[in-house]
Image 1: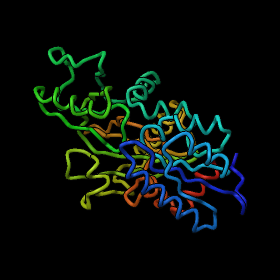
Image 2: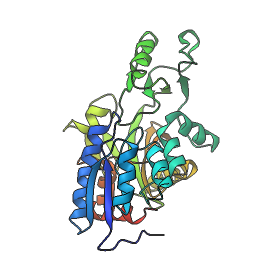
Image 3: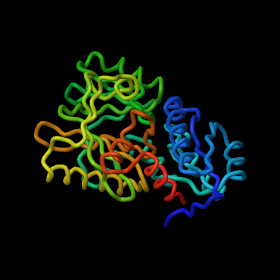
Length: 305
């Protein structure tokens, strides 16, 4: 059911926050706010950092467009507060948001649904790295479990380098995922209102699509349409929709995946509030399907609840 916009609707675009992705969120929020304002919608960007601000937002505005990335804003916390305040908001509900932000539990759910995702090892304060019995083949990739934008991630080629990479990741999160490295091509697929948008292939000179490649490099290539048989594209899009659905995600988001040398797709992670910057992938996919950035933002807003 669509949210009823009218000339008097006041929209709070929630951005910034306290997470490591704060700078990206500020850029997303600014772009979303400007796109809404350009369509005559009464939107205001709010750099929200605490409960008191959210309570004020609920009093002063009719609906919240969540452009917060990372912990607190994307992990179900803000969603739970807004739900308790009975304020409509965009995107996934609190449970799916919490799961999607947790790379480990997302993979457990995908495994339980028999969806393909690379093998992995979980390390935490209670489950320290057992290097002598570590069984994944190298290379591997080390990731903080509750961070986005590739923050704290590192490719590890040699066993002797693994402890240091885990320690570096634990600067951001005590829970760390060590995932089997998949050699092949890197893709992403946006989801909007139960439809998979066109695939985008990501090509970078870095070892993977890391923070620098995402937000700083001018060398990263974004290929859309992709050079894959139509049948394979459709197979991947269907897999993405299943991956999105089993986590309980709603309205919009993005699933990242690898395609190995045998054309086997491997699900990597799900983003429930993807970036909306000039380098962002969901707007790129929307444009490839004939939708402007402004139209995309309005459609997401109209599915607030």
